[in-house]
Length: 229
Image (cartoon, rainbow, N blue to C red):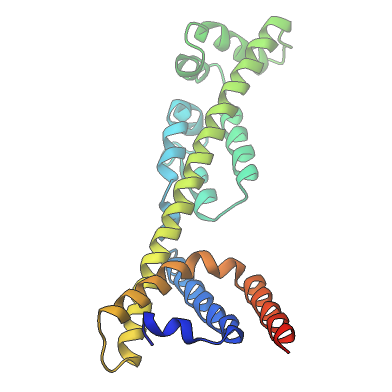
């Protein structure tokens, strides 16, 4: 089949065609996922935003794991943990490593000018004293800035991961479509190449909605036949 023959397809066959295209998209996504066992594969995409956001807090992370301070953060990202849970775990890691030794270097990145005050607050907490209202306000600002930076980093990381995964899946779907078209077509020409390219291109976005779309087209076909009598 080439582009010129698409118009000859019966409306009732579109559901089957869409299911086939969706299967191609699903297979492409599956091949993208296959890369994950190889040192994380596609899951590494976007992580650099997260690590960059954590660099100001490296002193705190090193109190937990001096040799690999980002190990827990990266493991959670590669494992696909829920984003909200990842951010909560990240905040807990920073707070766990927050003490009188790490407060000053962290404050230099987060609250410049308040590094001595933040270190004093950390010492208070270490000896069991309760910070006063002004100090609690400083801690609240500190937490709010951490949350804002983590939110931005995880959103950018997720967006890059999602977009890159779709792009790679689309490229794979196009290659599979071209190979499939070449195998089943005796006289493979430019029109077949373009048709296979278009099929591969739409396979990825169609895959998640294929069931609903196929059902809607089938119902439309039956309705059209009923109207025609």
